[in-house]
Image 1 (cartoon, rainbow, N blue to C red):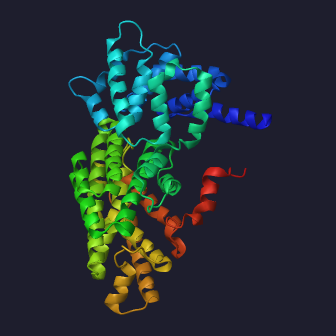
Image 2 (image 1 turned 45 degrees about the horizontal axis):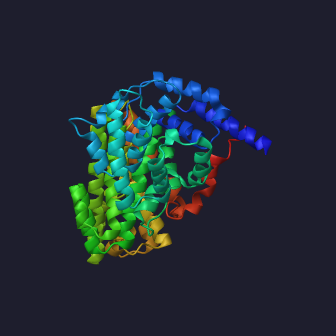
Image 3 (image 1 turned 180 degrees about the horizontal axis):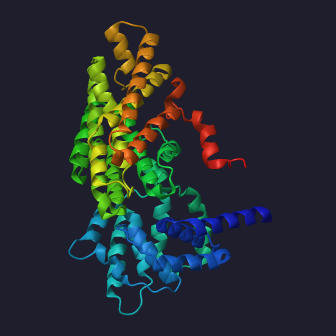
Length: 476
């Protein structure tokens, strides 16, 4: 056990020394403190927080700013309460956070503000506002149990004033349940029919955006994949046609008031969809905000495509092969991933972004390859009840051929689209970096759909790959 403890301490020191993301580092320090083991890493934490204080830190997340403020003040490093100015005043930012039911942000503000000193009325006001709304949320909102316990404890005694050892004894059991963004979201929205594909979504993103400086892009794209999975499974596998129409109408309006259009079981998903996009918008630089907006528009288009597929299925419509590909290539999620994959890429110019967003022949080729491979795999595994006729079925119906002949033809079309994609490498060298990302995205689909399998749906097929990439060290 001592040997195991030494190994774990070494891993934590490595994490503290190598984490380049300020928010990730702060979350690690906060967890270490909550777990009551900060004395084992005192020097590393002191050095880390001094570095954080002297580094540029900008965030539009109330939780992140409050965490930054609390950690530094707790360790005797003075920071001004002016950092909270962006959430109050004429722009009413604090009101918008409250309206979005950002419970974690308010809890972090409430705890941080309790490190106030004489002559800081703005922090006194923050405590009063946060307490009022936290008390309201504990009565009126369906908080997850871990967060509810933390809110209730803070309302009794704020975190900076609690006995550390007692807080640790309570936090340890909670920490086991804190599995981050996806687990909180997946549990909260309660769409039990939807696939839980957090690992697979991150794997897909990591295969394409593997470079060290693209950590935010990896996370952003993974979140898009997971949000799309929830929407896709709702349209395909669960919702009635009327519920599909209601969901699409709400997504096109993209406003909190549109929640009234939805059946009860989709309201939480819709609220979380809007909230997550808002959080992502706040996390990016001003130069990247328009790209998040474009990603949201692509998400809305994708919803429209999903609805059209649902309408065809409801009407038992058998589209022509050409009509089927025109629609389902766009519903293959590739256009959305191409746009969202530019977020966080500093080298993407406005010109190259417009190339990605305009659905050029290369983007369409990638989308068709993804659709063809998915459809062939679907013929082998069987389809969901809401799936529209696949490209394989449409080709069989239109040309009166067997499934084997249709698959052979579609395999040849995959080869044609790869040639179109290869041609894009040579058309404009300024575009080469984003063309390369589209090629990487297309190549990644082989992991999920090669050999006529659907490893995204049947994720056990990916176990060896996941372990080789993330668990087992490379033999040296």
